[in-house]
Picture 1 (cartoon, helix red, strand yellow):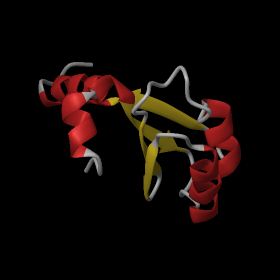
Picture 2 (cartoon, one colour):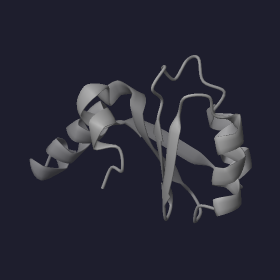
Picture 3 (cartoon, one colour):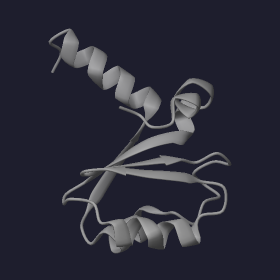
Picture 4 (spheres, helix red, strand yellow):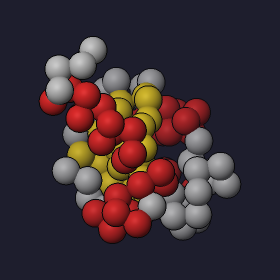
Length: 94
């Protein structure tokens, strides 16, 4: 359900799913969008998708800022890692 299929294909290490411990807030997305420079952001329930086009390390959208804007804890995985996790689950790996 990645809203950025171009990013998933072209730069999978920079396309992240941020799994929130709460339902995402539109106000939080708006706050993050104000801080974004080149990132694209999309919220789908309790998953915040971010396309870090210029890289995660240079972004102002850090984990702490995301958690503050969303009002809960979060953990993120890039598209490469998501693919590996899905494959492992499909194979019955622990």
